[in-house]
Image: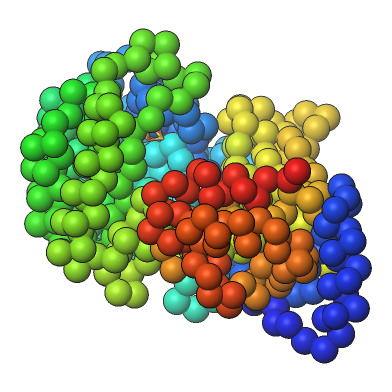
Length: 425
Ligand code: SF4
């Protein structure tokens, strides 16, 4: 759990402040909450805007759409991948020994391509090898295109407590333009089924889609809100490097139009009883995503699976690590079939980079975070950021309350500018 300021802090603060100017790593006195992320890297086909570590399970053939789960199941190396995850976790255990796991997130890729039996085995493995706290939030991502009602129920029975459904839009033409494999009717059925089996669930939506008008956005939003979702994630579609859209860019709404859409989303979700608690996330009371909150609050997470990232705190350093990205190579590495292990990179974050890393996350939150967490979770003194904090307050980007780091409405609007004020000089 999060540490607290205690006696002896002054001596330590002096030492840490001196270190903050250099490239040495930092450490924390007591580790923050720990989450586990598991990456399942396959999708039916690659969406043209996607820069995640996801791989088309049968190549990018359009002929595999629909409910071809038997074919997909044969193509997915579920058994071998689960064995690789187990080996990866067993090797990682000494790094997190005895620390309770607060949340689990199974992401991808399209994790719902894996069978309920595999998800059950994965969760049993995690619970057996790690002290997962009772009632832990366990999220799994699912796509409506891979939807089967029986599977959703079986995922819930396997222990998934929260389903995150990648709907993106309820407009068939918009879905086609962004290369999604599902249609709006499948999305509606998926939501109704998820609502019947999960206490809490999330809709992933996107705005500023190719050719999208403000009216079309309103229609999408109205339809989403009619399902009374406990949680909405609403992302601005952006063109990322190394994607099909970067090579052949579609015409997207301009910045002013996108900003107007964002305002409509904020107004309508507020009216529907959802709180805008993070730059792209809206939730009802007690329905915020605990796993993502832990990222934004600079908590720790163990990342398992191809390309998964992790952040772990120790008494003398904070370490960031990344697993081997290519699924085939990851499995070989984790299963001891190659000379390298599954961890592709691991480095202690230099103390001078921690203020930016902390603020990059914390300032995404509408409520911000307590200022004391900066000390507890980076091991640095507040003096290490006194300069940029004062400048951000003066520019009206940061709340002047010294007990909290919270963006003002202006700061939230110019979040990049605010975050960049904490970059190392
Ligand atoms: S379904 Fe999601 S993870 Fe898979 S390619 Fe599309 S956007 Fe990427």
